[in-house]
Image (tube, rainbow, N blue to C red; front, side, top):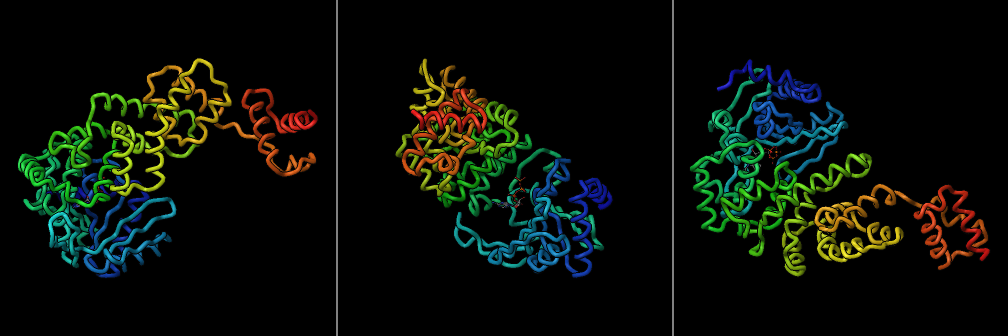
Amino acid sequence: MIKKDSIIKLLNKLPSQLHDIIFLSRELAKKEKVGVYLVGGFIRDLLLGKENFDLDMVIEKNGIGFATKLSKILNAHLVKHRAFGTATVTKKDGLKIDIATCRKEFYPNPTELPIVRQGSIEDDLFRRDFTINAMACHIDFEKFGQFVDIFGGLRDLKDSRIRFLHEGSFVDDPTRIIRAVRFEQRLDFCIDTKTLSFIKQAKKMKLLEKVQKHRIRDELILVLKERKPYSMLKRLKQIYSLSFINKNINLSKNLKRVFCDIDKACMWFVSNFPQRRILDIWLMYIAAFLYDLSPRVLFRLLNKYAFFRGDKKRIISFKKEFRKIDKNLSMERLPVIKLHNILYPLSYEVIILALVISESQQTKKRVREFFLKYHHKKLIINGKDLLSLGIKAGPEFREIFQKVFRAKINGKIHTKEEELEFVKQIISR
Ligand code: ATP
C-alpha cells in the first residue's frame, strides 16, 4: 500500500492547473461534507509518472451537485448527463474534469448496458475494467491523499500486468477485451494469464460479436488513436481474432508499413503546414485497414457500425477515388490546373492516403507539389470586382474565374491588380 505522504508528494508535483483544481475540490469537499476521490486512469498515470490531464473524480453523493458548485468556483463550463449521474466540467483553458456519483452496476443481460444505482466507493471500483484502473485516492479534507486499492492495482502496476477484477468481467462487457489489449500495448504490460484464459473463453462464446456495433466502433477508434495501433490490432487478432469486425478482414504484413508511412506523411504535412486543421490520423488508418474490402461490403460495414457521416464519406471517397486519382496523377503530362482540379475537392486525409498507398513516384511527387505550391492558391478578386468592370452576373462569371485561376496557378499573375488586368484582357477579346 502506498503511503498518504507519498501520494501527497505526487499530487504536489502536478502541473499547477491540475494541482489547483484538486486543492479547490478538497476545500469544496470539506464545505459540502462529502467524500471525494480521484480515480481511474488519472491515478494509474499519476503512479506511473505519466502526464494525464483528464481528471476523473467520483463523489460519494450527488456528483452532479458537486460538479455544479465546482464549475462555479472554476468559472468553467458544465455539461450534466442526468441519466448517468455524471457531469463534465470544462475550464476555459480546455482542461476537463469528469465527475460522477459513486455507482454500483448490475448486468441483467450479458453484453448489454448495465443498470446503475448509487453505491459506495468500493462498488464504484468494482464496476471497473482492470485493477490498474480501479484505484482511488481521497481528496476530501481529512483523508486527503489516502489511497484506496482493493484489488491489488498497485502490485499489478509494479508487475506490469493487466488483470480483470472478476471472472464475469468480459461477459458483462466484452469491449473490455479491446481495452485490455489497448492498455497492454500502450504501457508495454502483459495481460495476466487468468485474464487471458477468460478472453479465450469469450472468443469461444463469440462475445464481441454480440456487442452493439457503435460500442465496438468507439473502442476501435480509441485503438487507432493510440501510438501503436498496428501492434494493438495484431495482438487483438492473436488473442481473439479480428473476424468479429467483419469476416473478410485481414491484417496484411503490408499494413504495418502503410501505418508507418501514414505517420511519416502526417509528420511531413504538420511540419510544412502547422496552422492547418488537425488531421484525423485514425481515419487514415481505418481507411487503409478496410481498403481490401469490396465497396459494397465496406459501405455496409460503415453503416452497420454507424460511423459519422463525415467520416464515412472520407473513407468511402478514398475507396472509390484512389485508383482514378493514382492513374491520373501518375501520367507523364498533367497540367497544373488538372492536378488542382483532381485534388482540391478531396479531404486532406484522402489526399495523404493517396500519397502513402500509391506505388507511383510521380503520384507521390505531384501530391507533395500540390500541397506545397498550389493548394493555398486562391483568387483575390470576387464577383463585385467583375460587376465593377461592367460584366453582368451570369454563367460568364464562372468561365472568367476559371481562366483567371488557370493563369494564377500557372504563375502568370500574382497580385489583385494583375488579376483585374487579366479580366480586362479576357473581356476585350
Ligand atoms: P485513457 O488513458 O485511455 O483515457 P482511462 O483509464 O482514463 O484511459 P477512460 O475510457 O477515460 O479510460 O475511462 C475512465 C475509467 O473508467 C477507466 O480508468 C476505468 O476505470 C473505467 N472504465 C472505462 N471503460 C470501462 C469499461 N468498459 N468497463 C469498466 N470500466 C471502465
